[in-house]
Length: 310
Ligand SMILES: NCc1[nH]cc(CCC(=O)O)c1CC(=O)O
Image 1 (cartoon, protein in one colour):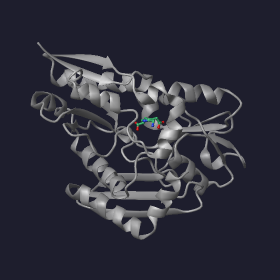
Image 2: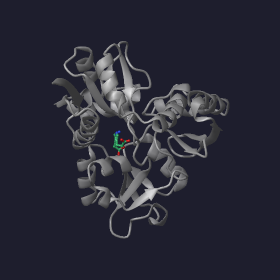
Image 3: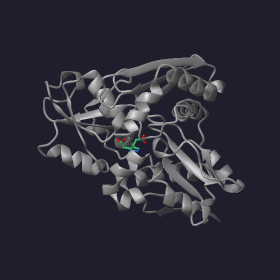
């Protein structure tokens, strides 16, 4: 029996999504033995350093150790949240497969009487660590106090039980994958909080020359998800931005047309540049690049640069 070792971080979410991936792979390849190997990343070891790394634009502090394990053949497939994966893979590695995306939206979880974003009282305290969510929240409701909230999903939910926050914002996908969908109070529509590029999608990364494993991983590839996230990630890459920028992107496909929406914001929400592009799904990469060029013409670079500086 062939054995494929699947590597992941050890958080509740990372393990839940990796178990889901392995279950799907096992359906397609019943005669293959899949093993899960957990790996500790810099992000796990040193949560304190996270803020500083983010400011320096250090990408991939969730993925470096996992990619090293792939390159050294300690694992064969790495499972990542796509939105945390840098837009370019290191030499020798590739994204072999992108399974079907779950809900890309952000959600609100609030205390009693704080269960809808639009209905929160003046000055309500909303927890999030994402600069994108912070900027878009302030643009929608300048009165809100956005308060830093870090940690994995369990930590963030526990924080809401304390005094500091009235409500918190998380990705729907994380709660769905950890079977906590019932905790969601409101799905915030993308016209208020445009999701992060790739949010709700996973990536299976392999060694670029490992044809057997690539074939295994590709069995659960989803073309529609791939077109959508390619448009979103090309947009992000075209802006010269990473996952720590106040940038949202969301692609949808209807009637054979892919529509990509992109937003770039000032950190304090005082300005948001919004634009869309649309075309054939097969042109997803060009649509993303065109939208980035369009937004750069409209002054997006200055907003991204200002956010990077803090
Ligand atoms: N940056 C943390 C992170 N990376 C992926 C997810 C879960 C959602 C997803 O798969 O997109 C989360 C948590 C969150 O944003 O609430």
